[in-house]
Image 1 (cartoon, rainbow, N blue to C red):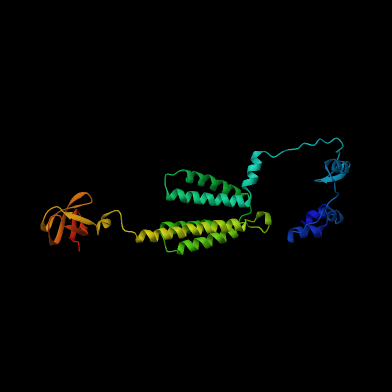
Image 2 (image 1 turned 45 degrees about the horizontal axis):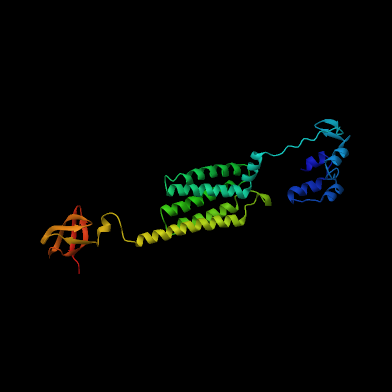
Length: 279
């Protein structure tokens, strides 16, 4: 930047400070310190002031003839506005997170379609926006690892180990995602906190649902039959037939059973129930 300033006869020290210290000036101070050539109130005044000025383009000296200059205004179209919106760091970050959560929801509920399609579209838009921004790939990797760990926690619960580690990685990755100190490229702390709390809440909810499921009685399979009640269809000692789950079963009991006795199922061996008299 000092070389460019010297080439154009500008203030080299101030040019250096713009890079090192992000220095800035008011218009009048910039004119006084030889940072700019002039100040114009509008386009007409600017063209009048520059008409006849000499400037060097490459190695050639050119005289500006702006007396009859035609001003052409080019308005940004919808595509430019759309790209300007999604390349906002906060919007890009939100799109990325929606993409991740959409795919996770689709994995949880295969066949829903809407979360998967929405997730893919948002993920691709977020990825496109990020490649236009000064991102730190270590931060992006930490976000992906964080989401992955929380997903592992949901499918293979570790009582919070993966979930907590994923939340920490997610927050750290979000904080260092943008590889710049410029305020315009920083992601809002509030948005990071909102997604971090949401992610942590999801894996805590998953653990809570798991613990509840473990405490509940089995409702499918042979294990769910243990402790249920059967009714003797005949009197027998050793083996006989009982009625359970709206079906007739062969049963074995170490006690003498009378027809109509209510029996407790203690086990199952193939298609034979192990029963005993209810106390």
